[in-house]
Every structure is written in C-alpha cells, then in structure tokens.
Amino acid sequence: MSAADLPAMKTNPTFIFFSDFDGTITQKDSNDFMTDTIGFGYDLRRKGNMDTLEGKTTFRDSFKEMMDSVKKPYNECIQYLVDNIKLDPYFNVFFKWALENNVPVVVLSSGMEPIIKALLAHLVGPDAEKIQVVANNVRARPGKTINDEGGWELVYHDDSGFGHDKSLTLRPYAQLPEGQRPTMFYAGDGVSDLSAARETDLLFAKKGHDLISYCVREEIPFTVFEDWKTILDNCKEIVEGKKTVQQAAKEGHELYKAGESGVTK
Image (tube, rainbow, N blue to C red; front, side, top):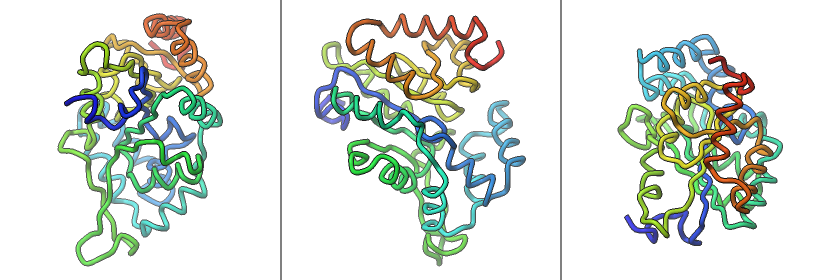
C-alpha cells in the first residue's frame, strides 16, 4: 500500500498521532459506563476483563457479552453517553496544537463508530470531522430497528480475537519506505490496545493501567501519561527536535522503575 492510499498521509505529515478513545481521550470508558449502569453491571464486566487478561476468553467474546447486555434503544444510548461522558480536560488543547502543526489524529477504537462520532461532535465541535475514526459498528437485529428496545447489536471491524485489531490500521503506515514513513505515536490504556502497542514508535500508556506492565514485559517503548497535557508537552518537544522518541521511552521506563507509573512491578 502506498502513502497515497492512506487517509492520514494526505497532508504528507512527519508525525501521526493514533489514539484509543474510551478512557484515553475521555475521562470514562463509555462502554464500561453503559455496561455498569444500564447493562449487566460492574461485577460481570470485571470478570470478563479478568478472564480476557488471563486468556480464558477473547476480548471479542467478552466485549460482545457486555454490549448484548445493554437493551436501551441505540439513539437513547447515544444521548445517555452525551449527557454523561466528558473529555480529558487537555485533549482539545492538544488537538488544536495538532491541527496547527500538521499532526493528523486518528482514533482507533473497540467502541462503536456512531457513538464515538457523536461524542466527538459534542465535545470537540466542528473540527471533530477532521479526526478519522476507525471502530466497530452496529446493526439492527432481525425484525427490529436499532432504535427499538433490544434492537441493536455490535458489528465487529474484523475477524480477529480483538474484534478490531488496531495493528491492521497501523501496519501499512509503519511499512512505508524511509523518507515517507511518519513517526507514529499511540495513546492507550487497556486490553484492546495491546495489538497497537507493537506497531508504534512511542506508546503513551495511561498511568495506573495494566498496559504499562505488558509493555515492560514485552519490551515495547512507552512513556507514561496522566492527562493530555503530558502528551502535548512530550509531543511538542519531539516535533521541535528537543527530545527523541527513544529519550521519551527511557523516561517512561525510569518512571516505572521508580514506582511512579501507578502500577506495581
């Protein structure tokens, strides 16, 4: 695949920022929030998460069970989330900087595209249309519309055990020839980000989340972020040539070793 075929390469960027959405750009995970409050609840969701981490089930199967437990009509789900989900307080500052510096932002999510686009439009405004969203989707169940009670179901992006293998979007960018290939950043916090972590030049792993331990174990370059101000400060230094991705990754590992990453060794 050539650079001309890749959506985020239209402006010939030197850097691209890929990001998870739920719990990374937003303060709460919208899918977890729905499951906990109008689905089968926290305890069953947490059990599914642990079973996934322990290899007893796939993320694909666990997440489908979560979404199947939510019966509220889809249009009501979207409004429910618009009313309750907030952005990280610094994301819009970061996004403004990214637009000004030709750093495309691409959302890669295991969530559902209509929900993500509705939340971004509400929380970011008209410029949200400049964020490419690659995610799962929804469809009506037989004999119903998505806006009926129990009328919608999840449609996965691909056939992988993740349901949406984010590495499949990242890899064509990573394989571009030298001189065309951009430096690739990725921000994430959870299980669905594992496939993306290996494909990027620098992973921003959210403080206090198990993704950090995974990166240490698999020797994947990462640094730690608490909010998007941390991400913005690091990206500015790298884009301006004041810091390399290798230096940022070294700092992240040192935070982990010093016990300041929010996870135990």
